Image 1 (cartoon, rainbow, N blue to C red):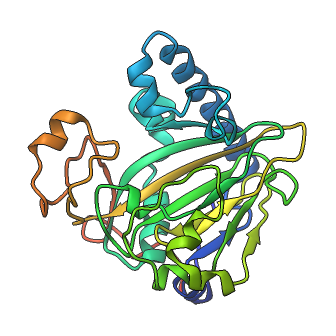
Image 2: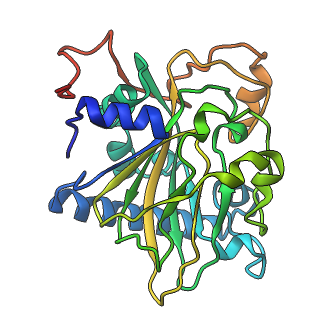
Length: 282
């Protein structure tokens, strides 16, 4: 796994709000990520057939005729139910890279997320991540690992560079109209979108307030990716439930630190690290 970062990498991430790391996974690692993700997704989908309410919270499988159901198959928090996925997501190397790019001293998992865009699947509307989540932070960060080549033809990610520096925490629903975000940020219509095509095994890191979306899949093949959203250690509850379990949600007051190690595992912290930051800053 490529965990080495240069000062230029960090500068680019901080400036643009996203960074593509080519060859992030070695060939054997990519094969393992693919097999683990496929198995975890199939396990979740099979289990969800007999548990509709639970499935509704952890996948986007609803009316197959709805626009969003044709954007991608989405399975959240697979690490909760699949030991292999848990081993992948708790890798401290992922946390160290994310923390180094974000410039924070500790990283917790918010949620992992498999995203399989189906053949001829709909585009993913422009959106921000953090406004949906139960904490508000300008240092939230996500990793998006391509399990297949993500191209202009099959729906690679697109970004609006620098928008993380201007974004607010306003919640903007994501739906069939890919332009809805611009109703809240009309000034962003002047920003030229940048595509992030990625080869299988590449990883894209982006700030949780960077505007991003994905094109339609105009091919007969699927476009698979495995992602994880990260929360800086010390982030506090903002009153939104999002994916928090009901009992835990009801126990929280706004301003409480979200430090439950089962719900949001701490996968890397500078204080606990036994060695200097693994990134090479040169």
